Length: 318
Image (cartoon, rainbow, N blue to C red):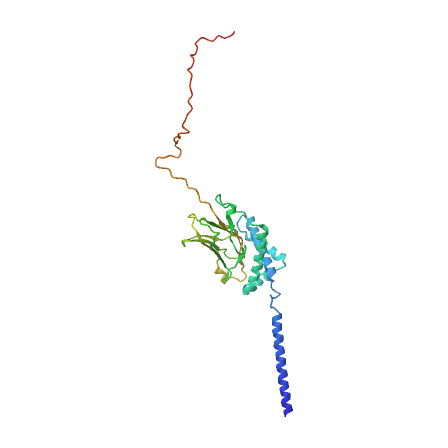
């Protein structure tokens, strides 16, 4: 009897050990095998490359049609892009659905896309801007402290980017501010509707702001002149891509992205404008002013009397 009990105990112990080994192997397999994107979908790198080429195609389409959109030309460009990567429209659409359902993976695609835009911005350099005669180049500074490019998508967590800069000792009363950037839509369907705001709060807590709609792929700039030459407290602003309600009922394969690139926030120290003194009543700016004592001294010149003119007739030689 004792021998039977001992055998049962050993069997129970062996079963527990086997179970622990199975659990340990399962845990190790979960830790060691990181879940990836299924092979039937486009990988993040390839998805970012296609979207980048979509962006270039959109720019070419706009420039070739002088700012007007030619949907046939754009569709042809995009079809050629998919053919370039050996991807069908159905593969691209199904991959887009997959990424929109996995927001973390979609963020990875956006990150790769933004890296491409930032590299492009560094390679091409910034565009030159005319800042005005009252601003010297030594008095300007780009105070934009974030990446020069970013991507907005029509989802609650990805459709807005804001900034808020507190003034420090490098800010002067009378500073002028200019927000300069390029906007490019990558859209299959739906409206292109975004907005941008630049606001300056002064030391008396008053706020001056400018607003602009972003409805096409183009270059934009917003400027606050600070005509009252007030001291600065903060500079704020944001971009917002509208969440098109029609997209909620539309196909989830509808692509809508806003690429904002080459962002610059320029702070300009300006010189006070000299004001001409007002003239008194009855005074004309073009009137002749009296000479002072020194300039009024004229040199006295003595004039000799003129000799009388002879009236004798002239003799002509034959």
